[in-house]
Length: 305
Length: 305
Image (cartoon, rainbow over all chains, first blue to last red; front, side, top):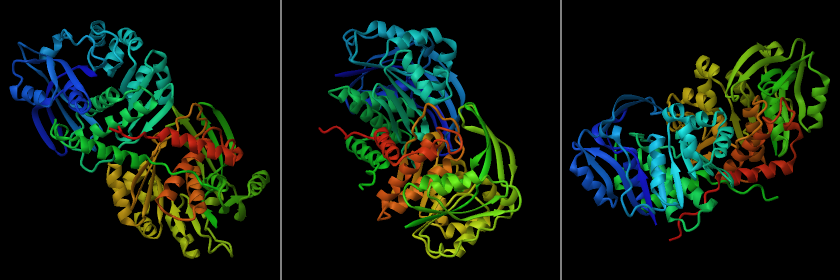
């Protein structure tokens, strides 16, 4: 099978209590791809400027990402700068320079129209819709969005919601989109808008998934050394879509497993800045940490008598 | 075996978006007992005033709670009034009238010195210490506390921490007591102060336990109809201690099961005001909801190939 991701490629400047990087490789499409690549062929559609280092292109290619859809245009690559505080739960955006990303109009390369897993990372919902118009009928379509679009383009978002299978979104955004301050009520409202699976990322508290099969609650792995949370959500989505692509059947088991695989990949990603850790993760490490999650959440049987 | 609880018995006036009760039966020792009674003999040490309705005494007795240690004194019963907002995550205390609770000096009745499970609900840590001086060497000693005591009596609390096996505490208080804004670091710091088991209640996110066996993460059951969260923490503690008392061995399995049993009882308690739901819960319902928690957290195996 195959996985298509459409989203940002960026140069990130990030400061956390553990240190700092300048113009490091980042962006939703990059984190997503580097997680999903463990499970299936990944196809990236994104844009960079002529300042984008050839080294990064080479790294992605060597990692096995198909970058036929990575377009280079005249101008600057999307740059983001941010600073994390406290225990990394709070961040401040210091700079957002869209550069060539401002005029990004995703074009699905010929031959990729029938990619059977499609992930629309957080971009303008009109562009997300335009991608759906360019692909056939994927096996799974998932997307992410943010408060900015929920506020500015609610009607476009509504159209989009009717056409996707899965929404992967964070706690706060879910409550905003579902117009409820209870996560259960919000998730139910969102499911009423279209997606059969609502996946809500809760940061240090894990993730929760709502579907026809009920609710699945995934724990968070508490880590000693979180160096940089940037990209954790997109890494989660990459592991999630990768695991679905690898699953012969799209049943409740496959979706639950996908949630844990996403959590596993995200837990690696935050251990270093940029792709420092994520690019190094092996299949064996993914499996090993999956078992750690199993143990973390394991509930023993009730009293036998 | 047997379980001793020392704590408040109160008349609560509570307002939530679902309604209101006036001077309803409440207090940590009451919620605790009504949860723990499903598993073992429960002995209550507490104080009420001469305004305390005989009906409540009768209810506790009929529920099988041993109230030999429930002393009635001249004066008013402890009264608390509070209002919950939003999705019940925020509350405001409107009234705290200590009444006879102000001069509460817990005295363990003769014959109860060797109760083998002791829970010290949230009261002045000096009184909690005085209870430990009156009992032998229980199989399990657990306690709860709050920010007020962490700030006012840190030294007494330190003494107490050296003498208990388990601390059951909420998220914020754990971070305050452990002096870390990461729950992992805070829990580790608290374990360094004495208790081998640190149980942290995270409200709508569940609970997490730290011990020699590592970390156990328990999910929260998302409920449609939370009417009154008052007493949820003490109900949790009651189910937790009850399940430990019923467990032949105090191994990791027993503690994990106890966390889920506590969560189960708490999930019932919040479905109605005061003891409205908790007093009605049957053993079969407890078992049934335990299975709901198992299903909620169930992680399928990793890919077989």
